[in-house]
Image 1 (cartoon, rainbow, N blue to C red):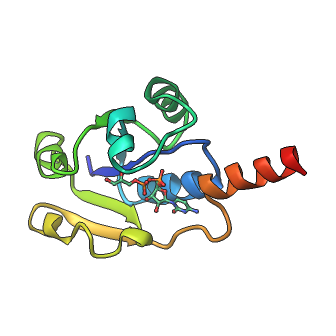
Image 2 (image 1 turned 180 degrees about the vertical axis):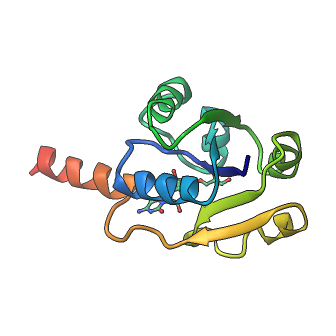
Length: 132
Ligand code: C2G
């Protein structure tokens, strides 16, 4: 069984997230998604609208996702790849090159981001409609 892993906040789920999850799953048979904890997000300077538990429940409902684990630190990726016997690590190409150190352990694939959509854009657009 070819195992794939990807990491992210996945807040306010949108088609950009779905596109990367679908393509990540197409690279193997089993997709693990490591979702940033609320504390880890704070470290990224992000405050997700949905809590970790809510984001976890949403991701677990997606047909491409087989398992959801927490992302608590930047450093856990090496351990995760080992522990879960991961064959392929996938991220959007806004992270191009940032995780090449994992190439010693598994395949590292950066996929093109979906243009024109992001959680930040959703929040901005909603603010605009509310505040006119
Ligand atoms: N993504 C995408 N297209 C978009 C928006 C996001 O392909 N329009 C991808 C990102 O490239 C990433 C994944 O969706 O691979 C999740 O994006 P975020 O939730 O924004 O995650 P991020 O803040 O990039 O956290 O350790 C890695 C970090 O946890 C990644």
